[in-house]
Length: 484
Length: 107
Image (cartoon, rainbow over all chains, first blue to last red; front, side, top):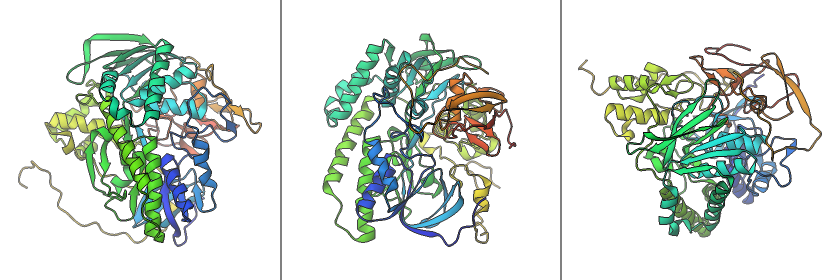
């Protein structure tokens, strides 16, 4: 079924991801006459923030689910004559400089471009706690995707726990859509922090107003609302039937005494976002550790270029910043690339100033939701690696032998399942560092190898591969080994 | 394996644009009606089938992230192989099977 690709097809710019950042990039490029190819693994563009109902449907007039009205206009660029749009297509490797390998319904192929813009967005940051794997426990992203993309509630009586703006967004959306929101538990002392940071928050009055409206809506809903409280346990056997929340203790764990149990049929969990930065990790780009931005984030020049020439990252994939920053960076990379490719006018100062203002708001927002120390909600028997059923206990035992994630991966199969570590490496790194007495920054993540997302074998078979190259032979060594 | 059925919510509905309608597919042999083009995962949640698979250790798992990252919603679709329920559209006549434990092989 796959087709053998001819010589790689040339395009102006290859954009990976059709969410807000990718769409804004494409629009900025075609406005300047530069062709681009947009790859996206979903059937429709929009990513998460601009998620649409399925083809053949429309959101009803007076749709109770909050949607951004800019979504429809942003999506029109995918039909522009200068845009080659590849839906249902996974970009899984960069086998040669500036050449990506992609796999979709028509088979696989390669595309060489003048530049590659990674706009792969973010995914829910995992935060293991007892019972988090029960059916009916869904992430904040999973809840919003059900509401916006399927016109479906995750349950009739729902609790929302987490840390960050998505807690309010999810709870408010559920309430407007007709669910009974029983409980909202935000881990940070958000209101107190927000009042202290009012000057910074006022830099983006529209976003601040949204937050106030959402908070008021939750008060109207009658939900129990707690700040400084976290998930202690989700209860149930075949699916979730209740949740216990607890005050957040000084060590980052749930307080054993101050607890509250609520019956629910769905639990929404939103402990922040993590950049979907696996493409840059696969390329070996330099990264730095910034917990407030979601963890390891790729190093970029002030033109959004990684240390692999021609590879740029914009939006949440480069560090969590939200939709407005994603849109602004997409617009800006368009003018940057236009200047590089076609020698146009210099980069727009107004766009730079707008981005700087949004970044100041982001810093203020991070302060609102900051926690005194990382959360540690897992018990010994809590599953950390969902795909391979590896508990915290197993990771701790392996880490006490050698506090190295690559070793623990091999010893336990942690991160070797279908999600490729997206739901476990963050927590596993923190657990490993703690068990080994290291700072978390030293728990280096294992190298990401292609395919960066799972693809069917037929996509690999349709590739014309060059002759195998022998890897450089390097003596493996581990710090602390006895002299060989 | 079955939880309480969840309807599509008091305030929610999909406006049909092109006359598509409810179609029937089968999950583990049992008929399921859902709007064509919506996701298999959403249809299973709606019909009270929260647990759509079991993990390696046999514990029930179901829809979690809704965006194709976690693979908790993975199901087996005859003729298509292992696909994510949250990304796969409902179509008439689909034969969908749940996966259990170490099921790594299948159609």
